[in-house]
Image 1 (cartoon, rainbow, N blue to C red):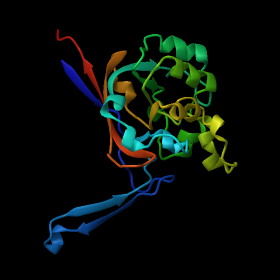
Image 2 (image 1 turned 90 degrees about the vertical axis):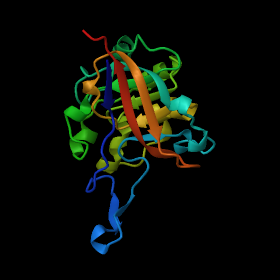
Image 3 (image 1 turned 45 degrees about the horizontal axis):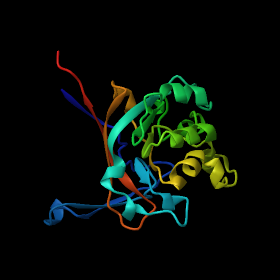
Image 4 (image 1 turned 30 degrees about the vertical axis):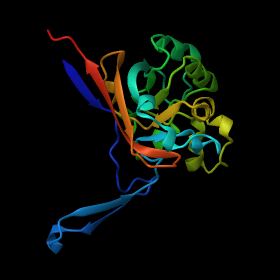
Length: 226
């Protein structure tokens, strides 16, 4: 039996961090059929980061192939880590012992079940990745990684008013993205995943020569019938 699990946030108008412009270009009332225009930051909601996001010489979305974003995935369950705490390396390593080279890693905190992405708490009280943990993931040989929480603690600067931190403090961007590992940010619904391994299909919009793109991300689990 096959289960399909959608890990993608809906694009919301009225989000306090990410403005979304949306309007009707034409409507049925005008006798023209209906067409919607929409625009937002490509790094908002569920999306893919390409290395150009952090590295001026990094590759852009043009170089991201289907093989880089589709394939076997391992669920790394660190949901026991408390709010507003780093994810200890030993905890990450134990939870990710089943990671294989070439995997897509799904770092699961189930944070979307504890705080709304449209609230300050989502950003200010989330657990976070450490530099050691990000480097450990890179050493496992993964090709992509998805997070269901704001994984770099320093992202809080946009709410706290602090100066923008230097790149090394964006630990997953520095240790993973800048080294060619694709990031999928702001996933959701990972609590619905039942198996430690699955298949992931992560399809960013084909936006040429860009630093990122909105994405639809799903997991496919295969279970024995009985």
